[in-house]
Amino acid sequence: MTANHERGPASRPARASTRTLQDGVKKTVLPSGLRVVTEAIPTTRSAALGIWVGIGSRDETPALHGASHFLEHLLFKGTHKRTALDISSEIEAVGGETNAFTTKEYTCYYARVLDADLPLAVDVLVDAVADSLLDPADVETERGVILEEIAMHEDEPGDEVHDVFAEAIYGDHPLGRLISGTPESITPMTRDQINRFYRRRYTAPEIVVAAAGNLDHATVVRLVRKALAGTPLDTGPAAPAQPRPADRRVRVRKAHDVVLHRDTEQAHIVLGGPGMGRHDERRFALGVLNNVLGGGMSSRLFQEIREKRGLAYSVYSYAGHYADSGLFGVYAGCAPAKSREVLELIRAELALVAEKGITPEELVRGKGMAKGSYVLGLEDTGSRMSRLAKSELLHGDLMGVDELLARVDGVTVDEVNAVAADLLARPLSLAVVGPFDEDELPA
Image (cartoon, rainbow, N blue to C red):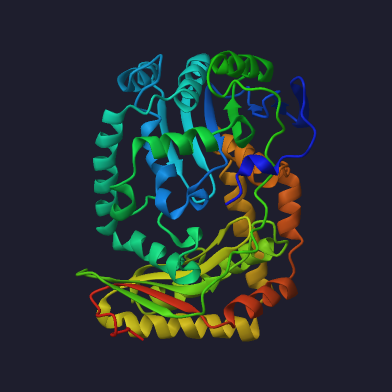
């Protein structure tokens, strides 16, 4: 696949450039192409810091399946300046916390600390991401940890069914593969392979450092530059990577059913199909539709399946977005003997909405849920930091809160119904994890 650092424009800044994006939000592009975005929130006494790398599991070859997640584990195991214990103890000694996660399109390393301890967090986190040793002994230790993590995931059928669903939609495309890798890919992966992936993919243009809280932007930039000095990320002039472009090679499979046998007490079901990419203007209408169908206790599916009939404890719908594709699904966990009835109810509700659409009253409720969840989700420094980073990394700009709320408010019944007719009237794929044989579909 094409390396993301080849996406950048021709211009290459010779010096750092800073501009104000919104009130309290500033962005600096370093000469190396690394970006620093901050939001000053003077009323808080904490700060959240994240180092976001625009590389995820979809950027891996089959031989490197799981390398991004493997690397996420290894970057906390030690640098030229710190041992693994130093990395964790220095943050914990000031009451802070640090962690990381890998997705299919990016990886994030983050810390939350008191505002006075932000310089320490910057130094520790930048050091870990920029200058990890990847000691061979640590590779073997973490290999065992990851294999246990994969096994543990298989013991969580409510999570596993979503991976089965993604594979049913995307097949052997990287978007259909497990982020963690598999025992078959993780076991033979060598330290040299992981290190080459690290140094080839973790480049300055692919990185966004985001921070939110009681901070000063210029000070954060100075701290980042100081921490980067002398590391492999302290590189020459380059332009920042552009948001991931659409890949025309992404193809979805023909709708079909997949059953994974597990000796579980519940049947775990996902019914759905392809959705839309994150740049699709219809995503706001899809968000409203999702809320109406299965976004809360007042949603159609929750009312029909749980409240009226008591057939499932958990039932909800969801939408996932990538740069060039997406998923829409309905999940339900129920007694195996009730799975046929639950599936019939889900199919009937989706078909009804596809044909008849939603009501004006449901539109108002769906938009209210979308706006409320977004605004309430920005009540802490961690979510503010994530908003900054995702906007820069995935979209290339920062949509203001008022603008986003206006976009949601502008959604019409006709737009929602058009999305429903498009997505829900198609043949749908079914993923099931439970006590069924492969040829024993519950419906």
